[in-house]
Image 1 (cartoon, rainbow, N blue to C red):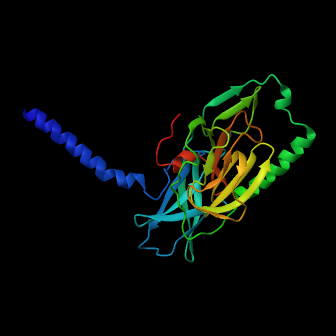
Image 2 (cartoon, rainbow, N blue to C red; image 1 turned 120 degrees about the horizontal axis):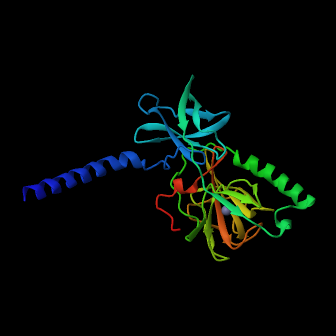
Image 3 (cartoon, rainbow, N blue to C red; image 1 turned 30 degrees about the vertical axis):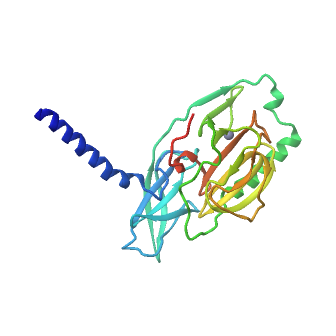
Length: 286
Ligand SMILES: [Zn+2]
């Protein structure tokens, strides 16, 4: 009997510890930290009490999002899929004082997917399509680096549409033995015409029809956080418009180079394409 009470007490104690520890780990206002290529590093910059003004931060020359949570300043750093694992440094400015803040990036091996296409024409582009695709890649590269200073940024996203996750982030795709760029977003299987909502409040940065991505909307959430919605069937917003969290921005489809109707959704942070699931509080169905 005494043993049973002792075990029950021990379990209760562990539960209490878990409940106490959980809010400290979860960071209500922060994305999940995952310091790997394609992840997000949440780097503490010190107490709000010692530095009342929000510090500014840069990775190389790209500005980085800084926010506060539970009385601490944090740099929320997007890590590109191509980033080299190891030690990296942020430049941080506290008023007139500039310091270097180190952080580690751990390696991560994303799964490989080998795809064999019989029709070589689907892999090799015509000169005209290649020129168009290259022009658009340059435009998209600029959009990804866009920076609009905002007083605050909502870092807790809603899924743009409910559906089965049909394509994982980071998948290394190899077509007929040739490596292509890794899958820098997630795919949600949706019937054509399903409403797609903005994952958080923001300003529509661009609305365009691209060769690969099809009808695409970029939403700028401020401070270098941008979401991208691809292969849409219809646009319901214009560039420059403000949108609310969950507000319908278009309908899903299979425009561009898509193998079926789905939404490709990417999250961009300080120019890096990062795993969207880090910004979604609940697990997605697969
Ligand atoms: Zn995709």
